[in-house]
View 1 (tube, rainbow, N blue to C red):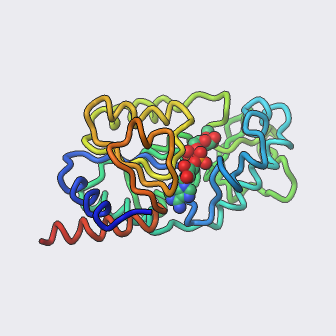
View 2 (view 1 turned 90 degrees about the horizontal axis):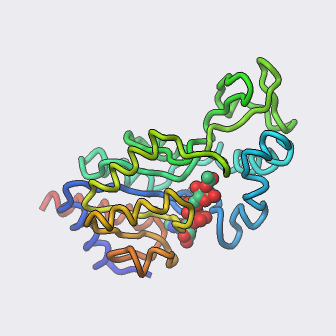
Length: 252
Ligand code: OAD
């Protein structure tokens, strides 16, 4: 797994860095009870993403897309932030984390108190009508009869998340590029880093001279080629220890 020395190394790197940015993925929320996409027990084992997660399916066969979306909503709606989300919020409050670029649509970084969160793939907290644009909280959308219809015009309802076949919101893309290009340290937490353009952020940071440190129980395509070093452990556990060490170093 990982050693106390690697926790201390990361804590020292965070304290020394003038600008640190985090990139988070589904593994960040595993300790909150939300399954990942890839790998054993992942969502994409159950649903073919190109079919169920595609914008065309949502438009023309919303009953299919909403089978998967209902599953996701039922996992996300009751979920609470874990120690990792709180640790990152604390780092930001200490002035040691500039931003979080998250691929997650669960909104848990916000709930934990992080302020500068770039939601690269949107979120599942709100939904909008694909015809008239009427927006409402997802908690107001009934899941007992799917697909839900817009209460204003009866149009198809879409969560405000990015689907396959859709572009990344321009603002999120621009801000993420700026953050990746200008950081000294990037923490890559709980992502397999295979979905672009989010997966290019560690490459951008590394090319610009930043250290890239991965926190993930498993190896990823970044481990050997992009990462300065990796800490192989669960995000919540590792981040709580790292932030504890950071506070110790700052006191001393
Ligand atoms: P993946 O499901 O591809 O990868 C999850 C990663 O989390 C894997 O590398 C796991 O090893 C790691 N992991 C598992 N448990 C963990 C833990 N407790 N702590 C830390 N890491 C852990 O998820 P993403 O890389 O986030 O896109 O997937 C990227 C995008 O693919 C998603 O945003 C989604 C999906 O298609 C859209 O919905 C547009």
